[in-house]
Length: 450
Image 1 (cartoon, rainbow, N blue to C red):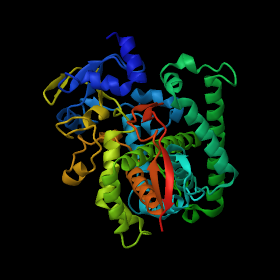
Image 2: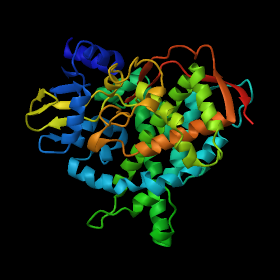
Image 3: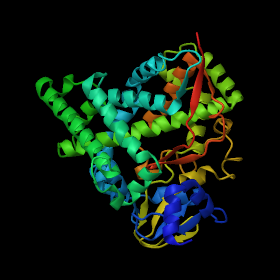
Image 4: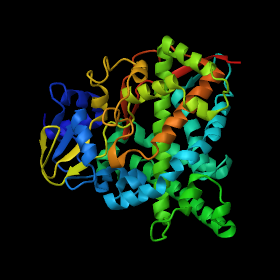
């Protein structure tokens, strides 16, 4: 297939493209699928090669240059951790890791549970709602509250509207083309796609800088020791080895990364979760038995430890990984990985979708089967829902925690069923950089649980 047709298929029909790449291939294939990467592009679906790739990541032979992720700069800004050079990335990752782990992570448990409990309270028995819209609302509130400490108010609503507008413009087939072909993003007036994106992004930037300035003033008045535990406050207190904190532009881009990556992706995964759980009565029954067996439904940590709930979440992320590829690595000097020879200059990416569909790893991979995660433990080179190696998603633990708590709380409070149109095979389609359901997932409220 000619390179330009490869690129269009990879952009518009990515899963079909990846399946075709590996249909008769042993796990490593040379492609020309991205117009924004150097021409020596290699896709990998062989776990043994991926394992060695992760082990060599950041060494003499293999690097993960942030510049290879330049396509994301149009959404996240050039200072995002995702786009930083390896040495700077390691420093920034060290600064940003604490808010997403340990006791800091647990501190968000009651917040997430409370917001999930408050969701859907306006719905009555018989009402039909769009699962994605509701999940976006919940995850947006989690992010805006956890990251900024915002609880409603003008700033909350303005950020919510501006982010929703930016995501909406970039979500459809046209939005996907806008991401990959810069000339389509030209500002031709306020009603053109380029003009609308420019206006939405400018509004988001203004609102984020206002929040940063306001919080800096609060730090000056009250001191860091009296600041709240939201992520913005924690980022403002971060200092590198030389005692330097993040600039306004760096803070803006990191906050933007958290807002987009931590909101949109989690909402998509939760939407798929409600779809699969309600298409599989035995899964729903086993999950509800586990949830109802909890002695204390108010304990977030107890919920997060439930084995079958964890298996359901992992299976959702396996069958529908939000990201289809790991971040690209560059081969700096010729190397052999898993028996395959790679050349200097090769840009290599593990194909998460293809790995998660390998029948030797996941028998009957197109079936939704949480039991596979009850019976087996998968390595970081086999289950790649959050990427791998030095560029693995920094918010993975928070995303898993959030998904489990939201699913549990909503299912404990409500009983649903899929509408007939939604209870069909739902193929993923591209939503900007990620994938989402092609058919809206609509649920009908059956009853309110006691």
